[in-house]
Structures are given as C-alpha cells and as structure tokens.
Amino acid sequence: FMEIIVGRPQNILRVIFDLDSDSDVPTQLDVYWCMAPRRRETYEERHPHPAELLIDAAGEPKYFSGVLERWLERHEEWGDARARFSVSFSSQNRYGIDRLVGAANMFDILPDSLFPSSPLPDDLAAAQSSARELFRDLPRSLERDSVLGALGRINKPSLKRKIRSRAHVLRDVANLKFPELEMVLDQAVDCRNHYVHGAPSHLSYEENMDFMSFFTQALQFVFSASDLVDCGWDVARWSKQSTTGSHPFNDFRVNYRDNVSALKEALSRRKQVEEVDRKSS
Image 1 (cartoon, rainbow, N blue to C red):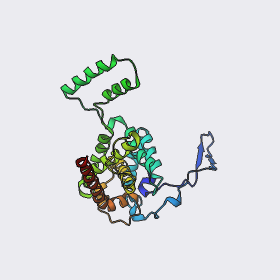
Image 2 (image 1 turned 135 degrees about the vertical axis):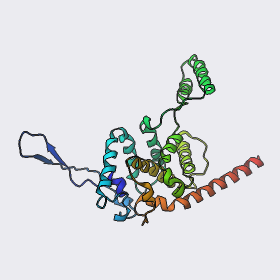
Image 3 (image 1 turned 30 degrees about the horizontal axis):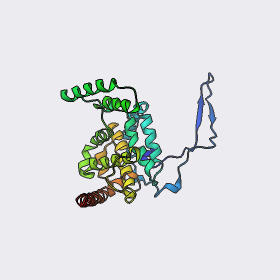
Image 4 (image 1 turned 90 degrees about the horizontal axis):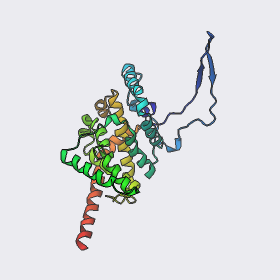
C-alpha cells in the first residue's frame, strides 16, 4: 500500500517480533534479515516529492486511514493479484516483454466476484450445448479438451473485458484525462497475446519498444488506481493536482495524450502498409 501511495518500493528498515507471553513485561525479538528486500536505486529516475503522494497522510489522516482500512479488508482476496502488481511495480523504470505480460496477467487472478458471468442469448446457449455434445463424443485429445475448455469459458469475461471493467471504475476521470483508454488497454492485451499466444500483431513491437512501456504503465495504473478508488480514493481530485512527475502515476497522466497520439499514428502507418501489401498481392 505504501509503495503505491509513495510511488516506489519501500525498503524494510527494521523487523520486530512480539512474542506471546504470560509475563507483564513485553517480550520482543529484533530480526536480523541478512537478505532483506531492497529497492534498487539504479532503477530510479527521480526521488519522491511530498506533493506527489496519492494521499497526504499527515494532512488528512482520517482520509488516509479510511482508504487503508478498506484496502486491508480485502487483501486476503486481492493478495495474489496485488503481489503480481508489486513485482511489476518494483522494476520502476525497467521495462520489457516479461513485465508487460505480468502486468496483463494480474487482472486474470483478481477475484471472480468482480466479474460476474453474464447469461448467454438463447441461440448462443443452444449452439454451445450442441457443440459440447459433439466434442464430448470425440476421443480424448489435446485439441478436443481445448475446444471444450473454450466452450466452457464462453460466458466468462475475457482478459480484455476484465481490464475494461476495471477501467470503468475510473470513468470519472477517464474521458477527461485519459481519452481512448480502452483502445490503449486493448492494444496492450493484443501485445501480450502476441508474446504469449503468437497472435498477429498490430504493430512491429521491436520497432516500437516505447509502446511496451506505455502499455505496461497503463495496465499498472488501471489495476492499482481502480483498486484504490474502490477503497475510497478520490481519483478526480488527484487528477487535477499539479505534478513534478516524481510519481509514476502522475508521469503516466502527464505524458498520456502524447503517447496516445504516437500510438494512433503508428497504428495508422501499419494499416497503410498492410493495405499497400494487400493491393500489390
């Protein structure tokens, strides 16, 4: 929680164990942690600034403690996904394919209760049932099991829909500060699918590596900001604050429109090249 509010991983300076005891005198042990997790200063671009905190704990302690309380209340359910976020966030200004894939995958391990299944239309439900019967009668194989698995997931939200659902939590600021956010997130998932499933790419990612960092930042922001909003964080007020760019979320906000323009231009160029290739063939 603190690494999100501050904008970078936190070093653990001291650990103390309080031991259960019948004595009236507290029994404590200082822990010597020979390989404690440490923030890599070489990964940092800038130091945090007091004005960049997502919540001013000193100035608004009740607001801070209220968000923290609600954040902790659901940590048992959200722990796995938040841990994946923390691994990605700890890389700070280092970006790459694995980080992008991890940033997208953390949405897949969010609690299922966030994404209730929607009932299928009657005609699609009938087709699903018929297809299941056909494939169940076939000899067991990887292909048969794969199709049956896909049929079972037909009314469950895809990764794109899950991410869009979390972005919808930020609707109060999305249209104003982050126009075309869904398009950016869809492109991020397409990039992830290219490296995970070999899906066709909409861009030459090797020639546009800057977009990989932009996609990762977008996924991280939507994941964590929507989490905080659920817990009472005022994202609309944050979006109006001035910034020095020392918090990654503020840096993402300030550079967002320029990155979207560059992305749309790259997509347009790729489409034009594909159209020329199609006509020439």
